[in-house]
Image (cartoon, rainbow over all chains, first blue to last red):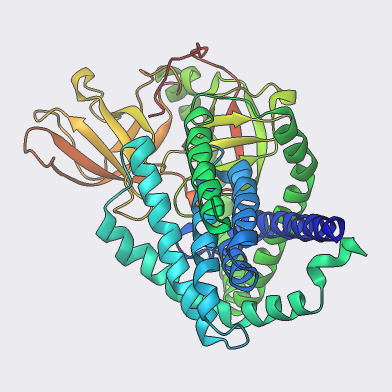
Length: 177
Length: 286
């Protein structure tokens, strides 16, 4: 039983790894042609939030850590930057998910909205901590955090049901079979 | 210790470990680890493919959207072409004059660098870090701190290098600063620092300009070459606004960059390292 559980975890994280690589390549190399930095959605964050919401805080921590480390490797200024932000967000989302119905869309939409604020605030704080400058907080809140949170809330409408169904149909456990 | 407390303790340990990782893998390292290198090298062609696909799709959509305008433009251009034949003879004269002036201005300074063409294969999708990824790495001789330019002007410098790709820190990143001077006056005392200016979208800010310096809107700002990373004389941008700094002691200027950082497709790496990095030293990258 324990062996089966560890096998299913490996399969799950392997799928998350591959999906994250795909999203990072698409975001960084394809979508970046069409979007400016200011209006580029963070699809990885939406994925992490939705899956942490479905899987709870325990798997959420591993999920946030893995996807964040990959993002750090591709675009981060140091290993751990996005990993820390995404891990904390996934942990908190996982905790809140206990109280919310998973088969209704309103809950995850609100969670994605809040998670975006949390994620951006953590990055702001880390920049302040390591480089002494995070930018003008209220300017960033008005120009980036709020529009991005609304943007992500709307993107959760197609993404959450997609991930919900994929999870129910065992998409993340393909390698277990 | 119950399970919840144990999990929370593990979570806190992970936070401390990640904070340490950020500290130890920050600006101080110029190369990736073997595992990172392997993953990046493997994905570099995939990134290149999707980047090309993106640009082709973008151009295709542009052509469709601009169809009527293109038909009209084509007609106008045909008419203009006929009229321009006369100008060709004048151009020959101008070309001769141009060669003469180039010699006078010691233009060699600007074109004597060995340039390596590179393709932009990825951009940081978040708004936090202004970086791009190019398809040239240490296998092509690229090293940390080499300047990256386009024909329009200065783009940034190489921050990290893997075998087949390199991460370039753009001028607009607020973590960096470049010594610069105003091309029109070239006053030795009027060297300022150009830094990213996140409060004004897509703009840079030149600070620490002496109060007596003659700086005006429209002036071209070039790299001063003082920090040892960027060669002297590369165009950074044009001043759009000048004013006093927050203390009223020095001047500052808002600069519109010469390069459109949102539309970077191909760049050149200046294959000349003005200043070899020694461990523990920092250059113009803050």
